[in-house]
Image (tube, rainbow, N blue to C red; front, side):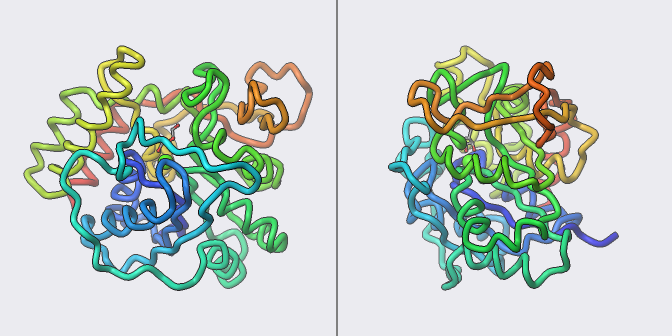
Length: 312
Ligand code: BDR
Ligand code: CA
């Protein structure tokens, strides 16, 4: 089996941390690089957090790149109210010692897509789509070389989490999302409709802690911190673990079900800015541009995640 080559684009974020750990623990994937973007917290923190996570995984040789420090056209909106001041609040965090690559993340994405054979690299965005869109705008020749984009963002039935109409990643940079959704690249979308079904229940969090490893302890403490916000907001029995659904889809697509539909991004009305207008019921006749996922085998997802994190 040849490992699938991926680039992760991320704004850690406790749930981003789970996604990165899952990818680094999985031999089916080769992580060519991890690009940090401004999102949950500002860029200096997301690039630092990415290196903390790689070191926690025991993979300090992973290449980490710093990308865009703000959305394409709008001021940056962050989410410290969810993720805490550091973006990775919960356990005490070590200072990372592994280096940051000197190349800009956008140039790394472009160079990698030009160097690797066409359709051999999958992009995995876990935050605002700024780096990906910036690469597509700067080097339109690379768009047709992408194998697939599997991203976390948007919502249809769950509508919004940062505004009544919009999910955070798309809301922060709707103009970038618009570029990506119009790019013609094979797109798989993990919206809130699916991520709100993978909740960090007590039993699942205790399974992380019971690993008895540093990764298990950090994962449990991140989940403990992260869930207080969603439990208060939604009255749910845990927090949605949004971003690792992207990596889980690459490993076990059979855990997920969705529809090939048309999805457009709201970029003009302030009231509904960043809304993913998803034609779930096929009422527009507009051509499908994404596999929009709606359901997941949550127990299967957590079994995979737990088994893989235990390998680190
Ligand atoms: C998304 O926003 C961030 O807060 C999470 O890391 C996730 O990527 C969920 O709306
Ligand atoms: Ca994220």
